[in-house]
Structures are given as structure tokens and as C-alpha cells.
Image 1 (spheres, one colour):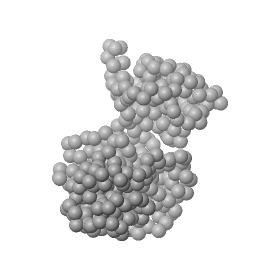
Image 2 (image 1 turned 45 degrees about the vertical axis):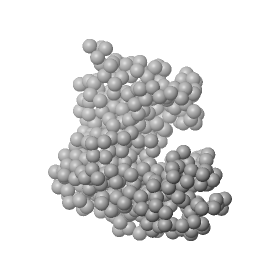
Image 3 (image 1 turned 90 degrees about the horizontal axis):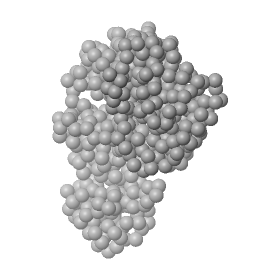
Length: 486
């Protein structure tokens, strides 16, 4: 493949050199520059690839792609573009042979619900016989291969590489989480989604190296609906109209509103020892009853979004019903069977907003006691600790304060910050620094009718201390505790 062929869909100006050269690799990390490659100069928060143009020349790169003025060594092809991140997405799609054209692609954006909805979609479509790849917060799934995720939405080069692997593995669909950062940084550029889904929007990810304001956060989310053929949106969210501003897609909606194209009716809580769930009727674009293997109204929203998307694949109602009744996502209200008298679950809630949503939902099931075990990460905002402590103190009958990822901080200092928040309430708490011992205490002291939630770690299988990640999976800890008590 020549530079000219690689860049045929790229809007660029050739500042120097020739595009007739053969390309050996597409590179955006200066450490991976090899002879004959095209090196794309990405400007990050702490490093600017434009400073490596001379290095690329010396290492015999065929070309560099730049977005600002830079030194141009003689004999090096230089392509000038408006945005090198956009260019990386376009060139990556070309480099891997436009694999998205061989797949149906479904992108899901929103503050909450992305992860669960992707797994629901995957489960429904696989129940109907499709082979589905997945890209998300927890992992990438390509056929029989599973890759732990580093980012919710990977860099565009990796996305296109995953698409190519999925197509080669026989997948016909890819469902993926699309973060606001992924949209802002054009990681999902270079192709058009067949379906885009909007779950909900709340203030989040606002601060240094994320979004300057809620308005920017919203604007980034809205980009998905100028890059998909069909947009499926939450009719009940207050920000949906703004998210759809300037959309170029056909639009469908879901929700509880009578105006939603697909709506849920007759919600019922399902509560039995060791299990919490929901059931409801689907009306409008679909018409049948479903049971959802997760508690709360937000689980119904996720199910609605998944069902609305899968409707476009002509799946049977039985496929939808089976998948929703059995699908459970690692670390997302994941119920762990430990007792016939109380319910224990693991959830990723790791900030005040998500913890309040979770505990408020669990309160609806009128537990004997609502017990919340959590800690907070080190090297992170102390305000988060105060807020989470206050939320748990207000909504839980018992809070068990423990360690999360202390990183470079003293675990006791983090716990003391959490206690500052709890003490603003009348909440009862105990503190046990060692997480395994804290879980042991929760299980040993579980009472009939209790709902116990282990919050914060979710799908994570490590604990980070002083820059080292030590293996620690709460499922393993629970199994060890149960074995030790036999």
C-alpha cells in the first residue's frame, strides 16, 4: 500500500516529498517508528509527537502527518491536516481495509448504563445466532479471545485493529461503549455506526484532562448522532433534545414516557433470597413481557435500549426474553450466591453519584438492612471520599469502611476522610482496613433479609498499593472466606 492509497480518504496538503512510497506500518508512538512507516504526530497532555519529526526522518519513516508548523527535513513526505487525531482514525480504517464495512456496528454513549447495555445487546444477538464482538470498559471480546480493557474506548488504531480481527473471526456485529473522551479525541472516527444509543446524561468527567464544562461533555456525547445511521435515545432524559442537536440520523426513542417509541409498563420488583430483579411489559415497537436479571429502574432503561437496538436484527421475542433474564455483567450489580437468607452483590459504584443511585435503588426492595462496604482510591479527590461517606451514612443501615486502591496514600488517612462524610449523618459504621477481613465481617454478620453491596471494585481484579497492582478479586476473596468457614 502506498501513502497515496492509504490517504485516499484523508483531507490533507502535501508539504514535501512524494506519496508514491510504499508504507510498512502506521505508527503514532515515536518509540515504534520503523523504516517505511507513516508516523502521525499526536499532541497529548504531556507529550507532543510533533517534536519527533526529526527522529522519524532519522529512522527512515516514509512520511509524517502533522497539524502545525514543524521542521521539514529534506526527503521526508509531510502531510498537513487540521487534526492529527482525526487523521489517525481515517488512516487506521484504511490501513486495516475498512473492516467496519464488514460489520454492523452499535455504539452506546451516556453517563451510566453503557457497560450493562453492551452486554445485554451481545447476549440478545447471540441468542438469535449472531456472532458478536465487544469493546468496552471491562474487556474486548473477539471470538474466543478476551483482552482486558485499558480505556472504555480505545485509540482509533486499536478499534480498527479489533474490527479487523472481529471480521476475520467471523463476527457480523460489534457492540461498543463510546465514551465522551473517545468522541472528543476522535477515537471512533473513520467509519459510521449503524446504530447509536444514548442512555442518559449527568454531570461527570468534568475537570483537568477531561472536560472543561458540562456543556462540553454534552456536546461530545452529541457527536455520536452525527456519526450513525439510526439513533436510539432515552425519551425520559432531560438532555436528550440537546444531545440530538444537529443530528443526521433517523431517531427512535425508549423510556417510560407514553411518547416513547418503545416503552416499559407495569414495572414489578422481584425479590427472593439471594436475588433482586425486575419485570415489565414492553409496548410500542415491541409487545411482550420480560424479566430482567438486575434490580432497579435503570436496569429497565438498559433493557429497553438493548431491545430497541436488537429489534433491527429481527430477533425473536424469545431471544430477548432469554437474554435479559440470564445476562449478568461482571461487577455491575453482580449477585454472588453466599446465603439462602440474605443477598450479596458486587458493584462498580465508585463515586457519590453512582453510589447514591445504587443504594436508592436497593432501598426500594425494602431490605432487612442495607449494608454498604466500600473504600476510596488514593491519589484522588478527597471530596469524593467525603461525599461517598455522606451518601452511605444517609442511605445505608450499616457502612463498612475499608480499603480500595490506596495507591501512594495511607489507607487509614483515606478511611478518616470517609468518616468525615459519614459523621455528617446518623449512619452507623465500622472500619476494617483489610478488604478481605471487611468482607468476612459483612458475610459473617449478614442477617435474614439483608442486602449487602460491596461497592467500588466491580470488575477490577487487583489492588494498587505504592505503584504496584496486587491480584485481588472480590469473587476469590468471597470463595476463600466461605471455604475457610466450612
